[in-house]
Image 1 (cartoon, rainbow, N blue to C red):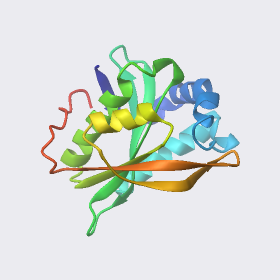
Image 2: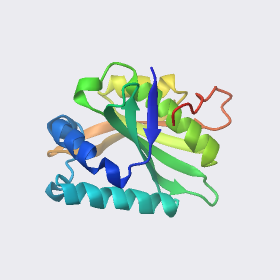
Image 3: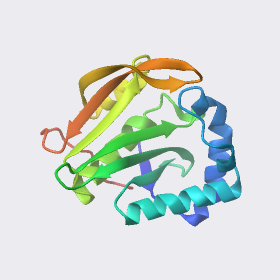
Image 4: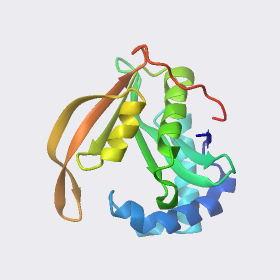
Length: 183
């Protein structure tokens, strides 16, 4: 699966807004909703500006995921970057409803690991998934993540609490990190 990653830019406002609106109900069935103000041209523009500021301050890095034809299929990010003593970040990703099950998530995570462990010099990346989200757990395991724990009732969505599975990946695990082609 070929995907490319690029940080969001001002030119991405319209396609990103269309992507988020088209996938809003799908995403909100699995993760907490974004504020209503996000779902406007100005809201997405503010979010892009915030993502750019986070990258400049080394707090977090967001990327848009595009398929081989250039279609916006998802987003991946490294957030909660900690440098001194940790050199770590937390992985997040979302793939649009029409693009799931085709390898986009796995390919995007692989590309992001190359950036995180390569260009950004991170040593550890964490991720978590709902116990019920077997597909996401599979994406993480295929990319060299190892489960290190579980938390009970640690995520609330629409008044229901869910258990989470916690994963980590270290830069020095000896597993090959996919090449950064198209990143």
